[in-house]
Length: 107
Image (cartoon, rainbow, N blue to C red; front, side, top):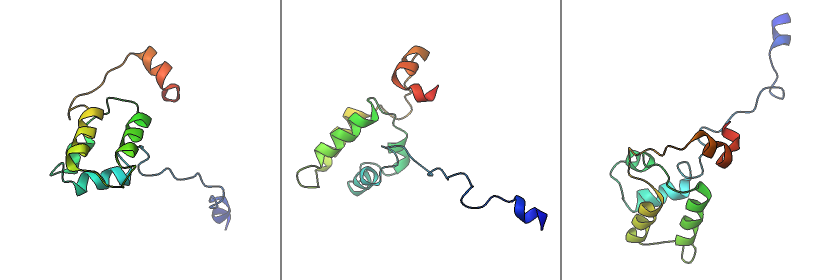
């Protein structure tokens, strides 16, 4: 009986973190568009491409692309990817001081 009292209750348990919280790679709208337009035979090819801009700028550009009609051409989506992502396998390296200034929450 003592053991039952020591277990955490749901109210006191730590909140669960979402499985994926990245604003680009976990954005279902973006992923559905990439898949629907068949830009890649394997979605891993898309998610392996690192961003070359801040995530909020990439999201804004995507929103503008779909703003008027909710749809876009495959060519326009392809250009959005090329403008906002580096090729797969390329990594962006930044100095510690840049990381501290740009993303203080990573420190």
